[in-house]
Image (cartoon, rainbow, N blue to C red; front, side, top):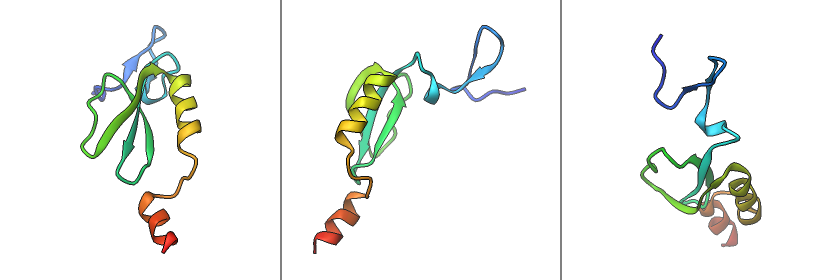
Length: 83
């Protein structure tokens, strides 16, 4: 069986997803539409995204997103609705 490089095995032999690891270290990324994403700190930041918080533990990053991403609409929609 071939595993994706981002998947890891736990001590019990089960696979974990680094995007959902409660013990992982994360970044908060933002794109041009002001959309936020939790990102494992060991994974390269994709084109079009910028790190705005971290590295920090998962909960600290979730708290940052909660405080700073208060409008889920893409920035282009927010701008269009102002006109």
